Image (cartoon, rainbow over all chains, first blue to last red; front, side, top):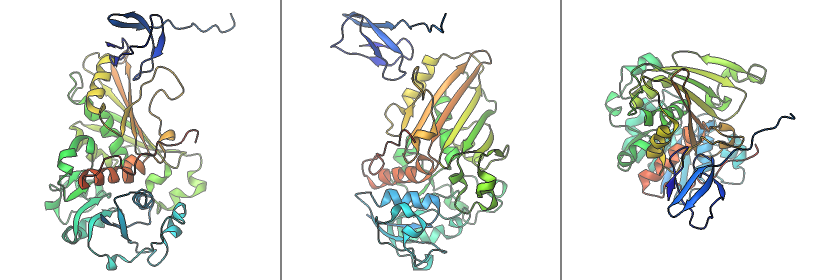
Length: 53
Length: 341
């Protein structure tokens, strides 16, 4: 169990693996599992938009 | 439970009937209307065709009921409430007639003295989120107005937040045409209403008094009519005395509404509907509450959306009924809304 770095919501999921990306249930921010014991998350990297450059 | 509705021919009355007819613990015994007496309720509310064989009755034929809902035009309930209270187990008043605790506010906002000011202090505001315990024993429940409900739900959690100053909070409210009622007059004609973006009450809106009463804030409310049938969007601008972070607001709103069945915190980082939007709430009893921080202007924007006939009136009244009657609070209110709509 840990907190969403964006909104402080409690997030947990014992079945996930490191590197898995999931949305925060409250604010929808994409989170990436960074550790399992203890369970930890970071903001998932956002794909930058490429507007045809 | 034996239930009657006084003034059931308007838009709020129709929404109330739609919900009560599908409530498993309600036996809808009577619905009154001065103008529609003797006619089937589906004549006024065609969506209820086949749902009930009830006909409107004259208010003079109203019999005692365990619970009485009042959805008459503003001003009528204040005179007759003592007799309705005497013949009913409890009364849920959807009019404005018992919303304000201060009798002196009625001449100012409703251009009439209140004939029974002693009832104003007895009336419990119909806001389960803040008065759940009081509602369980209430004899008179005063359901707030639609813009007031949205604004109060957006603002009241912020009141204890350090940094919310004792300065006016600006509320920019938009509402759909059904909020002005079935008898809205020439303003409701299609030629006048279609395509409208009208500041119909840029200052002095009646709901100002309710919002101030329930938040303790000084309110500067401007109300606009927009191209919609149902819906209220209240955008509240709070100019702060210190910076706040979104995380603090998440915690504040989560503490207020994390367990509430009909208030959802909507501040999503992705998707089309990132902030509250009344369009997808039509027919539901939800009020969606969201926020944004404007660091440049040190401004907090609190946003609330609801269906003015749902959580803004009839849905909220049924929620209050469920609390008062000791029924599960979500009974008959679990419709999630439509998308797309």
